[in-house]
Length: 416
Image (tube, rainbow, N blue to C red):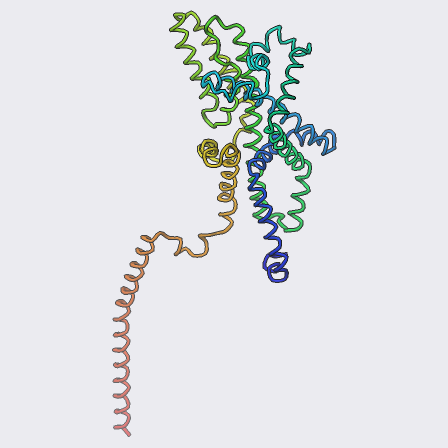
């Protein structure tokens, strides 16, 4: 049904629909961060979901498995990175609010968990013997009893997971409902939605997969390297550097180089000053592992998915940098999404409007229009001037013919 007929035949229903859309928009704007992150998780898990649903032919189970396979490892990695960040911030700034007591965690357990070398040591077997796991359980219970923020965090995470889960399971039904009720098949609107969906999937799926794989490889690689590090030459906060490298992979062009290059330079200067250059072999090993294992391999495997096909790489980089400044933490996801919508509107919708085909004269720049007007005026004057002698010649010929006719009449009258 055409929009004009809807406005004419059902104005009250149209008004009610606008009010409902406004109410939904207001609610979503209050939780825009959760909505954007949920959309991010949906696009990140959708390739896995589609492969699973083709194999097991059960959308609900496939959606659940894809969420568990991607979201839970990402949350664990981010949580561990936040623990290390809190330890480093507490060590550097001596802020008491970042201490383990304020987090409801036993200080000894906190120190062990945030020390990456402990995970590779034989003492890590305590994680399964019950001693350390019991301490962790007591810390979690204490945190649940003393901090209400844990409940808020869990509710937010649950909302993100539920939103992404039902998008995965019911996205085809939603698209079918839109196409059926608004008759958008084979229209510019459908082409626009497909282009936006394609670029969002490319950006979000590529980024989260690249960040998870890169961060995991970096944390494991740097932690293992520190086991063989000479005295005084270890990678500073190896797991933290690896986690930051994974987060920096979201930045186009430079990527994780903004993390491991300064760290490598710092280690080289420290090695020259403290050991006289004897530990530079470890710095070279760190550089080789960073370039080949951490940077090149994930980039080579994930290059087709890292950025949108029609989004300028410079604009995408600005979106990642300026997004958090404009919108807060969720701007890292919201700004690229807005950029994709704007770019595809310019690429798909604007050419279909034929803005410049209605009048060639109006599409010309002002200077060209002025020159054309002057030329037209000169041509008209030239035409008028050239047409004047022709008119005189015509009148002269008419006079001569009239004179000859009069003379002929006189001669005939005389003869008679």
